Length: 201
Ligand SMILES: O=C(O)CCC(=O)C(=O)O
Ligand SMILES: [Fe+2]
Image (tube, rainbow, N blue to C red; front, side):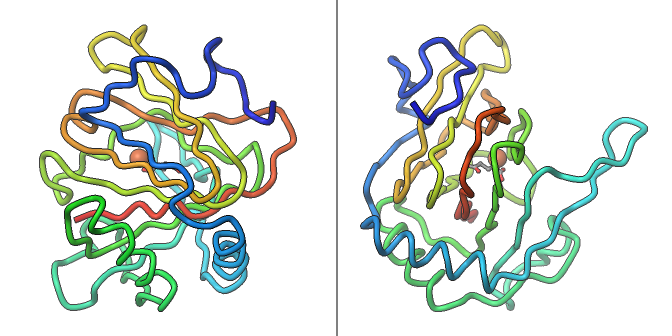
């Protein structure tokens, strides 16, 4: 099994709250996904952010890049720097994802997990600029990784979704207000996983 095992029932756990998470495997054909991934890894201007955590400055354990419409909204207030311009590949993916998500997106955050040590810690994407019940669409290419969620009110209520190559995960409804999510580190050897097209409205 190539998946890390944080939860004993690691994999697609039963009882996943479908009002807040929707998982669609194989939305992108495997070879198309691989070609897109290769291109993104090579041509994206990746940055590694430094964030303040308590009294320490911490380098985020993944690379990212922010793309957005240039003429709407002050994105700098959420991302602190000007967004990159959409590429034809990103626009193609956006057009495929939008009718499924039922929203029109205006930005995407690419995350690049270089190996099993790259991760994102427990958090909610509840910045004001995303609205109260944001729909976030996450497209995965590359290494399968576990996407874990836990209930903010009761951390023992938790679920895990295997994010597979070419899949789409929709986060919606109360996911950001009532739940936290993460991509855990793994001690196993892992290939790159790139591109959480985390598109926000
Ligand atoms: O990589 C993922 O699938 C999740 C990333 C994430 O949660 C975030 O960037 O806020
Ligand atoms: Fe997130």
